Amino acid sequence: MGSKHLLDNLTSHMTKSMVGFKAWKDEMLTPVAKLICNGFWRDRLIHQCLKDTPAEALVKSVSSSIAHVDIRWGELCNLVSDIYPLREPLTQFWDLKKMSFHKWKHDNPDEAAPQTRQLCLP
Image (cartoon, rainbow, N blue to C red; front, top):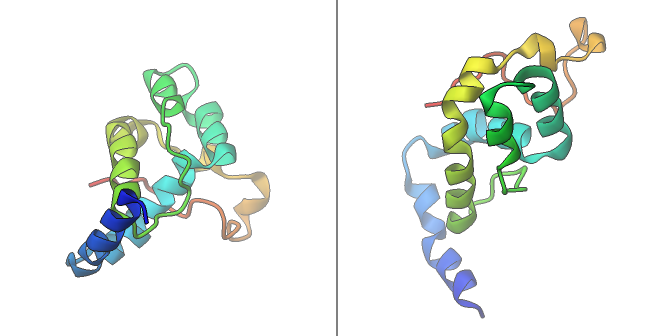
């Protein structure tokens, strides 16, 4: 058993005992992680919303490839530390219309798509 695995097991209860964490994770962190850490959605965000802005390089610099939010504390910390500097640029440049596909105008977006209409980061 490696030390990282041992630490993950020791800290696994932390996220379960934090009041409001599950709602925050499901409603805010997971959609942003899908947007930033998934190659397709990140490329679409850069091309549609961030092209030729200072935020373009910032989003490209995100090293995390975690498109889901795991309960492992270490992975969660790495993900949040990657996403946190993007808080202001994403809020400033986010545009749902630019991110939507034409076929979504009358249908609901695909389940895999980031579901937020307005990007609100605490």
